[in-house]
Length: 307
Image 1 (cartoon, rainbow, N blue to C red):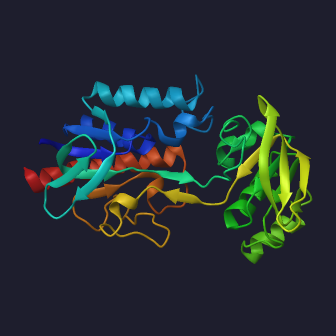
Image 2 (tube, one colour):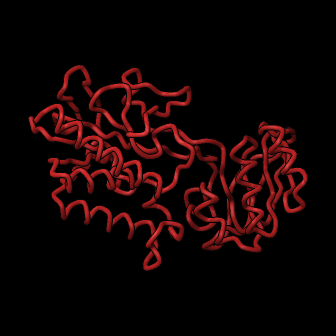
């Protein structure tokens, strides 16, 4: 069974940043990624708000450079799915579909996936008008019209934020009233750029290369209505990819891992970084910062515990 100083589960920006710092810190480091390296960033057309990304600021390019940089310091990579983690001893055991590993430290960077509408056209137009992040993409819709799907705090707050850029923001909500805090509701109702379509869901998203319209379905009458829009922002929640650690590390009620400022979980030797942990802002830059902190803490832990 292969043993590593540090095994990083998840190959998104948090995992790749952690890999760079761990490898530079002379830890024998392995990154296990079950799908494709880069996480959500790899599916993002442009990352204009990531510092230093003015040249070729596409998600795939930035992720590729992150991975190459970590590899240049000795990080090893494998595409495999983690099936179980044994946390009962100082040296942790990780079982994957293809193999088993031992690790002095684990940095869990499994990320979180945005909840999807699940309608035709959503995947087709992701990055081409469909977005799950207003901070990332609002600037692309300056003076254009966008639809926001959802009625909770995040949807309403993001709708308000989008009015700084878009000419018109339409909130589509499946109920006849918002679920957001009253303060956010009052701000949204008072904003002249925001209007609301109640009791409705997005039945499908259409366009020619880019989003041009949505087909809305009234949940009470089942009537379909075509609504023109340049973009669809979906804010109906996120799902942390933390199931493998459930009942092992401390999480909040939504399944986000709770850490301290050094990214330490409640189990010695296990750290968490990126969108999978409880935090305020989920962006590439904060994921990368989490990874750097987690790796630095892991280096110190290995030095104290094993040397």
